[in-house]
Length: 408
Length: 82
Image (cartoon, rainbow over all chains, first blue to last red; front, side, top):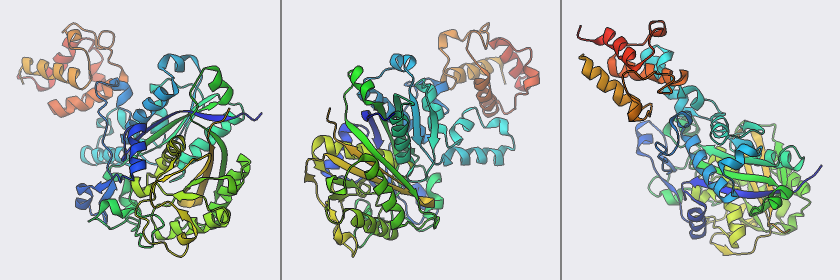
């Protein structure tokens, strides 16, 4: 069985906006969501730069028992999912009557783990941890909570694949629907932004030190890039079997047509152009799309010297002759890590719907490799029929997704 | 601690932290059947009582605690003036 898979709902909660409308405007305007977190300075971070994401107030909006198992990233995922369900035209009554699955990317819940440890150290008594600690602490915190809150009864699991988690979650949702195992799957990615979560990443000296100019700090592909900026929030998408979507009269935003993956099998933190290229080639092959037919590539590029270089080499190898427009929206959002693969599909579909390519802000001076790419340094008005989105992570996990404009 | 102060503190945390409707908080209310306090809520109440009254509830001492009034009796036995 091979079925068409369409996106029928989207929701986003990020540092560049807390709704699709806000995010679309930020993308078009090239607005940065990066700022300084003073607490990180006090905790000895090299770089206090981060995406600034406002915590939602859920007390009064969500029942206590459903709320207290949500860690920070779960709160974001709840907010993003509300918007995804609203745009999908799906309410609680529908979810109770129709089996829906969930694949969500998440790879940490540091704050809950560390705070529980602090209580044990201070009180020497685990019974003083409270009932929410365990449900907030596990990597699957997002899926265990969302599936309970929204009464989901289909496939239910978290995908932990470092900074490719959100992309693989969509890829797996796509495969489950394509093969007829599910009709509806909620997919996405979530990322905590608290200071506990990123200390060990900062320890690798991977973050930008441009503290005096936060909006200029994330500069993927630019010759003067000096590191990434951690960020977060959540992105939710409703993936659906095409016939199922048509039969219930759903609005179709785009079609997922290809998923490619690979593992570098080399180094725990160093990327590989070969691994990136294999994932992209597999995605194009699965989609039945030629490289020359891709109008836009949403790059993974995080603004690190090595990572951007290897991705530029890989993109040039595959797209060198057609030179599609390329941008890394991380120039505005920072690196949304476990969430990024999902949010960047939403960013890209918003561009597709509104016929523009969001800028790779701060791309001012190309280097040897990025000079070969057609990088959009400003917003470009452009029709996008086909796009490819890359996501790569620690341990050499790679994912690429191909999305097409919906045509009946 | 006086009985009135114990009752007021319990009443406040049941409303603010356990989010029980104020109208349901009466002395004869059954903790489980009337107030809807389940085993997970009770895990949180252990934490809240320790924070507010400075002692840790022992589950075996709660065997006969059925109503809100019994619950305040139990707290009073630990921290009451008498």
